[in-house]
Image (cartoon, rainbow, N blue to C red; front, top):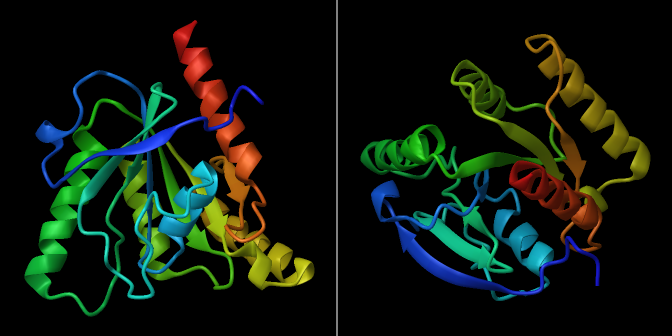
Length: 203
């Protein structure tokens, strides 16, 4: 088995308060994206466990910070999605507070993976989220999802458009991964990246 493979993954805790998150100091890799971007499906595909993260055809279902311990070495963190139009203003404000407190104040967060649906053109809400991360110096990578839903030429065109849009504001791009939960495209690359960061920081 490859060193970076997920040998074990289990749910640990859900909450809305970062002070109640695990306190063992293990690195955390958080996943976030707009509602219905395929976040739970990707998490399950990474772990090869379809029941690990709750998937739903109803967007906007993840309302908590969910911690999963992987290989007893690091945490995979499932964060609430943003940009779900049908939430009330108060619920939206509460979720924004949960997300910002975790992303900005959680010392154990090593990297934030921001998921983008590869089928769509650059969305204003995603671009604004990237800008907010940049302004606050948050380390992140971009993960394009649902790559199997497009022809290769269209996929390449959509990703190129996104990169060009980002380079209007950024001098260089963060790491970019192209994934499919259905075909496991990008799975090994993403897990290898996490493994390398973990073992670089250990040295």
